[in-house]
Length: 161
Image (tube, rainbow, N blue to C red; front, top):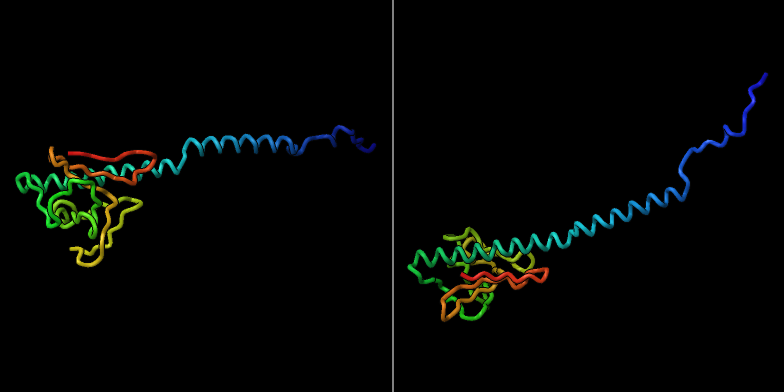
C-alpha cells in the first residue's frame, strides 16, 4: 500500500517571516546607534588633540624654565624679552622662540596638532614654523603664560608659571 502523505507534513516552517527579519534589523540598528553615540569618535579625537596641546604647552614652559634656570633667572633669547601681551610663537611676525629652546632644551619645537606647522631644517635657516601657541610674560609678576588658543570642545588651555 502506498504511503499516504498528510497535509501537515507540507506545513513545516523553513525560514523567517518578513516581519521577524524587520524587527531584528530594527533592534540591531537601534543598538548600533546607541553604541556610536556613546563612543562618539569625533569627540574622542578632539579630546586627544587637546591632550596633545596640554603636553606641548607644558613642554614649552618647561624648556623656558630650564633656560631661566641656566641663565640665573633671566630668559635669554635672540628674539628679545618675552612679550608682555599674548603673542604667537612663530618664525616671522611673532615671537621667534625656537632658537632659544631648540635643540638645547627641546629636540624640536612642538606645534598645535591642527593649526601648527614646522618646515624648518635643523637650524631653521630654511623653512619656517608656526606653533599655534601664544606666549606672554606678566610685567608685574614676571610669570610666563603659554596658551593654546585653538583648543577644541570649548576648553581653555593656558598654563602659567
